[in-house]
Length: 203
Image 1 (cartoon, rainbow, N blue to C red):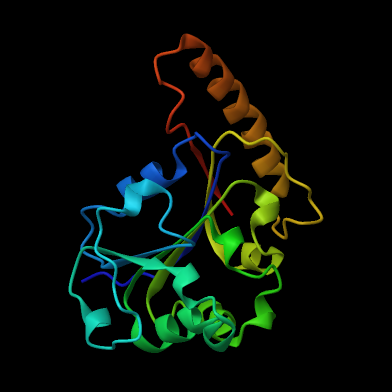
Image 2: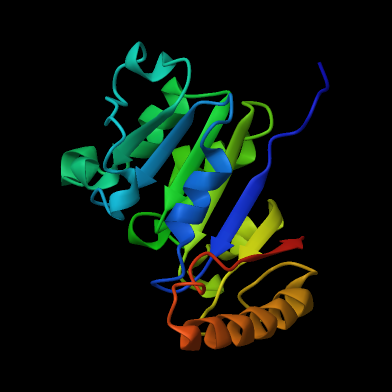
């Protein structure tokens, strides 16, 4: 069996580009088990998947498939950030999708010790992590240093190089312009061909 390192991937695109559908296609059918973390159960692409009890080590040992985690359930003051603690404690060797993560992940990664440890230990714990955002600026700046791949969809705001801490910032800006043009032309056709247009950048 060939060894591989776990990876951090960033998927960027404004509303209506098909980020979550694209993300589901990336993971569906893989042998790795997957947690899809959302803020409140949206987008609806994740609704058919069973919600998992992250406080249960037994439930988190599911063997395959996709399970949903709703971060807002852990938002009360007495349980704030519990979602990260339980995932860190009970989940390894799989994929975590942080969908629309700006709603529940602090831009200062070090403010949450369990999320910070997930990032620092992702290779050791064999956790592939996918961050789904609307804009490059929605990504906590420190995460760019861990990411190896970005999928760029149409965006409203172009990369601010001071916020994107990667040597590939110029390439991301170039790809943003390319994808925005392709998306604009495809949308004018009116046949839905604009949905799911993403281009990969190796970071």
